[in-house]
Image (tube, rainbow, N blue to C red; front, side, top):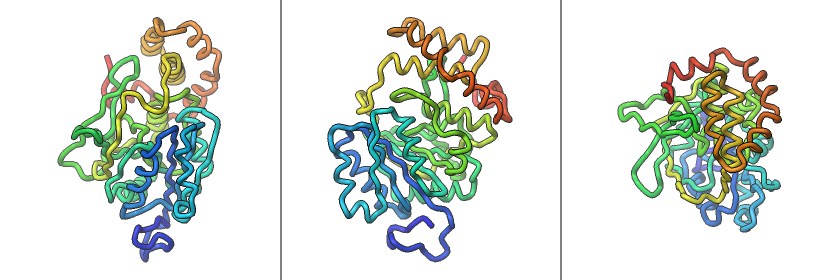
Amino acid sequence: MSRTASSPGQASPGARSSTVSLVVSTLDEGAELPATLESVYAGSVVPDETVVVDDGGTDDSCALLERAEWRARGVMVHRIRRSGVAAARNAGARLAGGTHLVFLDAHCRLERTCLARLRAALDARPDAVLAPTVRDAAGTAAGCGARLIDAHLRVRWLPPRPDETAPYAVPLAPGGCFAVRRATFRRMGGFGAFRELGLEDVDFSIRAWRAGLDVLAVPGARLAHRFRPNPSYPLSATSRAYNLARTALVHFGGSRREECLRKVIGTPRAAEVLVEAFAGDWEAERAAVEATSVRPVEAYFETFGDWR
């Protein structure tokens, strides 16, 4: 059972049978990483375990978390070769044992009830992918879920609905923090084969919605996220273009696919990117998505609005 902060080693009376595994992918986050976890463990509900995946970091920022006091809280550090956010989160999910997974960036500050509200919402809606309210740590702007705005597959955060307390449907659950049942995540095949950083959350949200799962905003679950112009995860133009091409090939057809692929042209090494994308496993991935889909992709845009 998920643990309360007041009795970290014992289940509280009447607690639900759900358990929470927090998965944090990190790369050279320095002091941000332990500060993020301090905010997590100051919550009214704390994770049953936390899997920190060090994605080839060089700043030794994970060493602190290998001390006895963090291990006693259920924190484990798993190191991998530099593989990118999607692969790092998949590695953490494979190690996780909780019924619920919460993926979290390593530069966040959770409000005290954030994890409790996400767990309660997922207990109530086990067929969903949940997105909390995310505030810019450097300001007051906040978003709860996001939507696609153009053929580059760029997104715009959606403002939280001020009068809503219950979860409600949104197009995308941004990857900085979202919650999903572990069984659902595994059934979905985890995150796709994306490079470095970007669009793995767009792909996962669209796949989930097409498979009949609801993507829901949980406005009462709140955290602050440090948005940075130069994140510790590098993002080369070729990787972003590859991720764009892969998403278009897996999900779209006709003019929508062509519009996305045209955005790749003119990026650095565009011909190489397109050759690699077309030579990849997108056809098998597309077939797998189609096999599990109960909603057509065009219905997604009819429901949530088009970028055109």
